[in-house]
Length: 183
Image 1 (cartoon, rainbow, N blue to C red):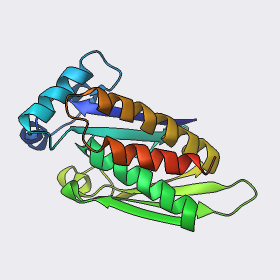
Image 2: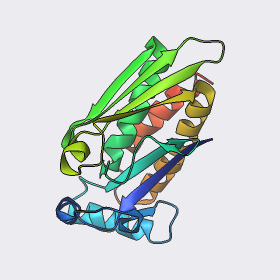
Image 3: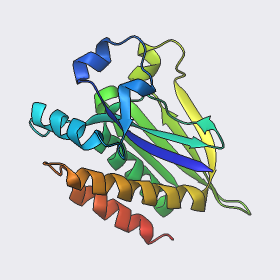
Image 4: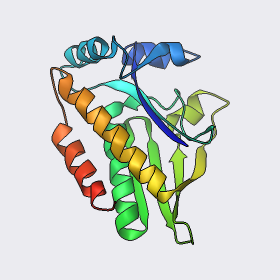
């Protein structure tokens, strides 16, 4: 089972950077009743430029990402969607998000059962906290990952559009529509 969950930080950028231990309690899932208020507060404080949080991805209880992989959630989602699109289009998708030096690579494996090898390069997280590896790689069934990325990307898009500043919603929507053509 593929699980993708988007979280919004309860704290500001500086508060997150200064924490030595991040946990589930530092974030709320976007379906939580306080997520919209926290999102609007962050956007208001940053003048519409930043919405901090993370996207946790797992497959069969193996985690590709963690709460230490926090950053601007718009950038994370745009990068994941772009990497998936490029992977399905060309066989390999590389994308990154420079603020905290995270990168993603997806490779299409041509097999009897098509799969995607998804590598998450943890960037600053692996430098800031000792127990975070430089990268994590998981193998996903292609259709399961594609369907879950479309579903959860759409969920994030709806959340993002509900905030006072919808940010890059148009770009996110276009990438989701591009991915639907592969279904």
